[in-house]
Image (cartoon, rainbow, N blue to C red; front, side, top):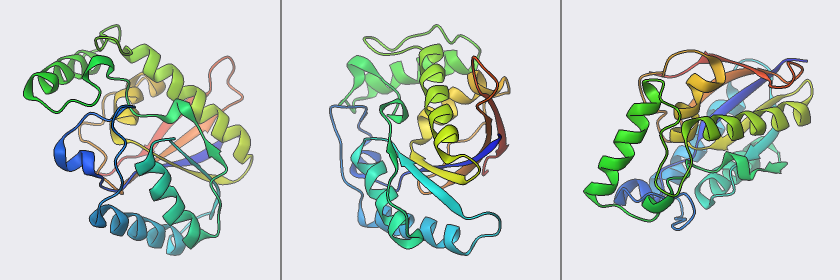
Length: 204
């Protein structure tokens, strides 16, 4: 059983405007722009080619849940799975901050991950290998729950971009996933002990 999973980044939220790290401390609502992005995502999925979405999953953070609910109303789907493993990157002591120093630290850690140094860790947070492991668990859970159906995960851009090299063995995609944007993954949960993950499409 090989599952196709669409990964959507949530719509714009308050933290995107204030550049506030929002793993757990800060959990802002979608902005009006973010709600429109969610509506646009729903429209694209409703009229798009290919197999319809049969399962909807999301991160527990408010911006992802709100986006998923907007999409679900248009597609006639309830959120079937809300997974802790889909939460944004655990930035530890940076959580809730927006100052230049915290962003310098963030850039240093993520740059190390992109260079293959997945053991680099956020102070009080996770390292790259831990992030990839939990995103892999989440994708495995979604793929098994979806069965033969196409599924949609509404989560975050930073966590999937940072995890991709560890998940697929391929390079960093080079650009962030925009708010309301989608990437396409193929997941084979039968490839124990870890599912095989392939990146099929990443918007540029």
